[in-house]
Amino acid sequence: MDETVEKLSFESTDFKFTAAYGKYSDQFDGADDERREALNTAISQLHSEEISYPKFYEIIDEDADASRPFHRSRIQGSRKFAYRKSERKIDRIKRHK
Image 1 (cartoon, helix red, strand yellow):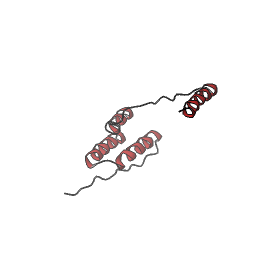
Image 2: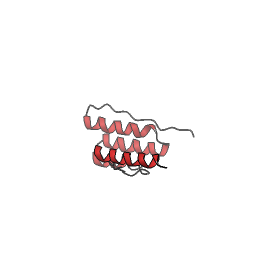
Image 3: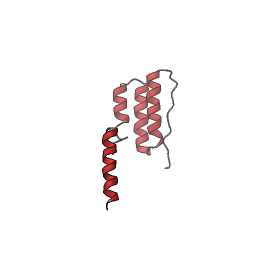
Image 4: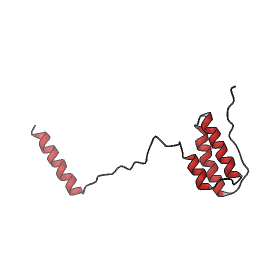
């Protein structure tokens, strides 16, 4: 059985549903068949108003970025005077080696 899961389409002009469908579509394109089934179920339940939007997004984001937690890197800056002073020190050390 070589059945592939088809992407669902809906005729809706509601902005919230259109945004949810865009998120669904992005997730659907790179998913395997099992994940596509879950996505189809979620979007059809949302369309028939069986689940709320927060619940839909909770289902959609369940496996999307499970391997990559939120990470914020810190940018360390310095003032121009301090930067130039450290560069002069580095150059002085290089020159006398």
